[in-house]
Figure 1 (spheres, protein in one colour):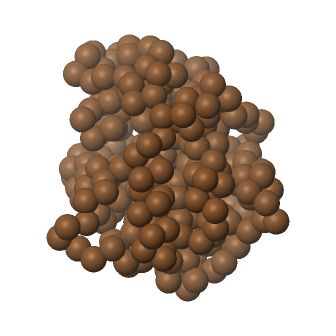
Figure 2 (cartoon, rainbow, N blue to C red):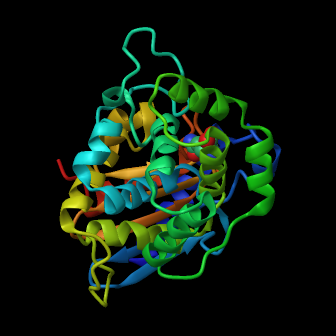
Length: 304
Ligand code: GLN
């Protein structure tokens, strides 16, 4: 497996040249465009990796399925579904244009920014600090190790977050967001700034592939029904407006983030963590998708 990963990684590394590191906040533009790493954790616990796996980066949108899980664990599926829908938006992650659709809860998707901001308001806790700490604790358990928060990225997100503010105030003005907008946003910015590496993403993916149980110990973190819920939404919306093409090329549930991470779930078989910060125009790792496409072809990973 290691040999296969090494070979595919070197084959796919040049694809990074077609992408660009995110620069919507100054702090992220410091990423190395040539970096590429992959980590795989099989359902029986076997680990394999190649490339730049030790690099730490911010989780960004890969936190969205964890926000959804925490909201589901706190409120149950019925309530969550009354606040956010499950239909693909087919639009960029920060889309604000609803001209061809009414802005109501059924059209808000938890894998794009609007829905993720609503998720932050659904997490239980007496204060927003407590809500964030609960999210961080769940992320630690899913990642199977200590993780921190990148304070520089957090400050950069917060001071350059006009578009996310616009989305949150639009939700608020339409009666779709409870609570203090700035506090909800602060929780969202902190959530995006959680630090991970490829191993952490692979571990999170392995729990989702293992129907809510940790690999090896088999300890249950969340009910199997919730992994079905999250994996289904990842399949249709996890790569934003690139989800259809990803389903065709790779064929497994996955979530990308503008930090360069991709967390992929191969149901019952493995979790995969990718780091490749050069992004395509949709905000997905170019070399990362290419690497997953090649791995999927070699190991017959597509669920279709
Ligand atoms: N922090 C980013 C934002 O809200 C996350 C988006 C992403 O990873 N696509 O703009």
